[in-house]
Length: 376
Image 1: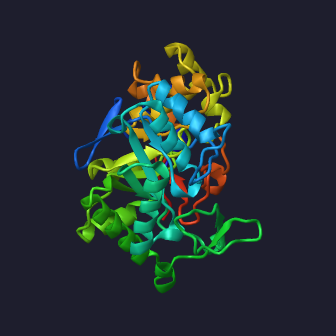
Image 2: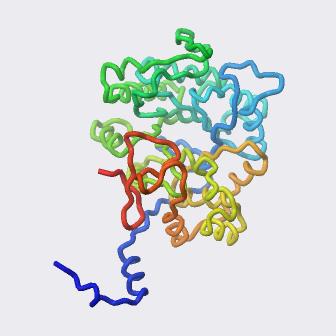
Image 3: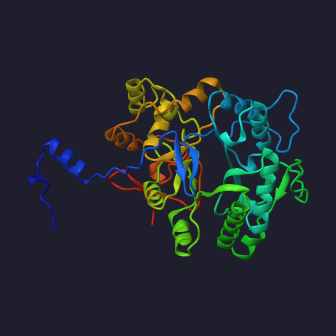
């Protein structure tokens, strides 16, 4: 039917009320300092992201290294959770800092990740054993599969050489050169790789080498498949999330299925709108109201949506700010207002991609009510 627009009220208050009546705000359970993972494993809601270079296997250089120094400072400031990954090539620095700090191992929550070039049952077990050796620990609190798949353009993948993988070919630049795992060649959908690696993590958890297991960059369809197959669901799904980019449909699904969402890029890779006062009027206004920094507002927004965060910081000031986010909360209206922001990172809403890193299998659309979802 055709609508006579001239016959409708012209009052702006009418249209505002109509818009608000159609809007639904996706609310998660706001997180406190700790969140309980499935299996009764407690994880700090704020952890330290990767914070600098370091040798993967040691020994520690005389002048120390970035990851070591930042990790030691994080522990001094009261931080107790560390996110790292085998492919970051700096886990030795984290482990050595924990040993030198005097903080008991049981008080520290360690996270690591299995890279996609090492997916497959046996490869995954070797990857975890390598991480245990580099971190110099007997168990890791949370191990995640770093990616569900890789684009063909990723190969060969060049990374640092490691003692655990002497068979890796060496590229002209001295880096180890990796090709795709055999499971992805046998099954180009990568589902065999996913299943084998997930089974390996489950077995390692049964062996006491891992306390909780998770995934990274998993979509709803991947999680639904696991559920339909009767597989153990992840304790954590780590994805990109920050002001301007939150997949509300994924967050809702994970909360309904007792999966904690963790933001890999809570500050949008230091996006000015999220980290600098004056760059965005909404974030700046909230920072002034609560006497906090722009970055603290950005982190609190995610925590209020039920999303754990792992910001990176290697200075005393920024580390203390990242930890000092539990003495205030945003109101429902403030969370909604922030959810409508769309600061530019790498993509734009025009191309459907408002991400800080690209994932060829994921394009995000936006509902009229402001929530995000996977485009059909």
